[in-house]
Figure 1: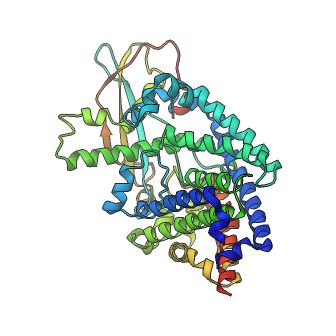
Figure 2: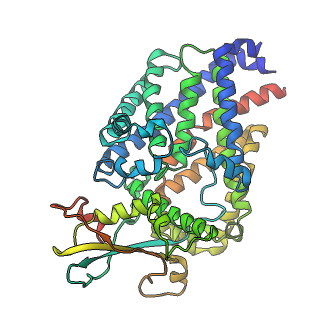
Figure 3: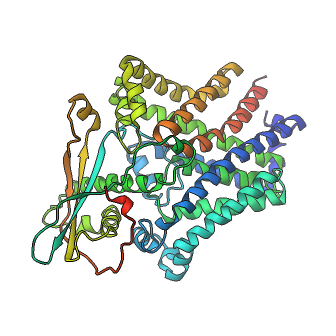
Length: 283
Length: 205
């Protein structure tokens, strides 16, 4: 059954999917790194996210953080900026290189290291897009370098697909057990806030409370059913992808969650690969 | 044949990614399994995908501060404009999101610290050290203390956090945003002498 993943057609599909994943992933991390460089005064010694303050949270976390000079050079303002510039250089290499090439791997390495350092630095100000980017980045680095076989690449794409499916399922189930989501009030209430809402979104949600409540409940149902796209017919998979793109695009415009669009869309080619794999096994 | 093709490096990748995925599953739960993963996950490498659920963020948080002067008087409370409005460009480019998220995480973290302290029977008002030494409090304090002095004779600063329900305010058709419920009012923190402001004026409302 798994041998179907090693046929020439499957390997060609794997490479195409990996390239698409890497393009969307690179776009997302490019925006992330550029935003962090634009906000780099946050990481300065007098900034809100200076290592002088954040190290307070990491003091008990291990040898790396107790070594003052090393941790300052890695996580201080200069270190943070250097890692983001290195990440941007990596993005250029990844976009210009085919998967499994030395240059692709050379590009992925600084991107993944930068993502890892961001996690080590602090979890404050992090979000789901950052989490997904790390997952996709590590999978691409491990599965599409010159030293591993196509079977490893298949494992990595299936891992990305599994994490993506888990993300929608977990998010959906958490909403399913939430009275505010199932009542249909969550959307309008979130859009009323200044941090994650907007005036336009609130007004649109308020035009027809019944429609908004239905939208809430449909979001929950689609998220819970999302993983099942892997087992359904092609039209169902396409419908889920269209819903997902629309959902994340709306979140980008109404809630300012711009990087989520890139991070989660980057998993869709891997989901497609998983769908094709499952359906070739099912035959 | 598939596993033969994987080779040793591929088997390591399979074990590593498989383990990463398996431990991600209990991290979505709010029971003792989720709490256990949370304890061994200080860097957030194990993802948590439950965004805005089961309890979505439906409150606004207002952050205000005032300086205390050498003569014992206090300046008027001033609000920190940490959450500017949404613009269409934020769908593509949103660096300010970092500051907003940092402050939201700090305020939510503060609430968690308070809940934990009350749960462990600590009197927060009489023994505030546990709160003052917590990372969320330090982050908020760092923000507030980095704002320009309200007066040349300012010697200390205190801040407060209010929780406001914007949806309820709109439903009640109030003409101005009410301050809402007080979450925290800090004690006075001594100001260091600073020759120039460390954070730009844009954060002052």
